[in-house]
Image (tube, rainbow, N blue to C red):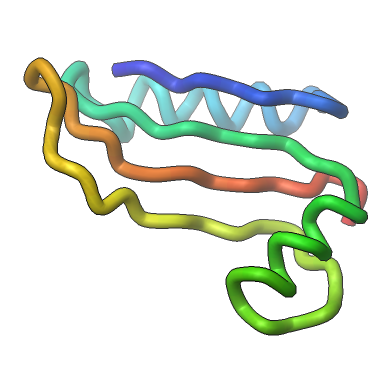
Length: 83
C-alpha cells in the first residue's frame, strides 16, 4: 500500500489520520494520493471541478485507470487544513 503526500502545511491530526488509513483500510495492492493545499488552491479546484466558487475542506477524485503492476490506484484526496 502506498500513500504519496503533497503536504504544503502538514499538521499532526492529518499525519495521524494517514497512519490509520495506511495500517487499517488500504491493502498492499492499493494506492491513494493525498494533497494538502492552501485555501486559494482549494477554492480554484472547487470552482473547476464542482462549479462552486468557495473554499471547502476536502475534495475527492476517483481514479478511472486500470491497475498497474498489480497496484490499483484509487484516486486523489485533496485537503485544506486551513478550513
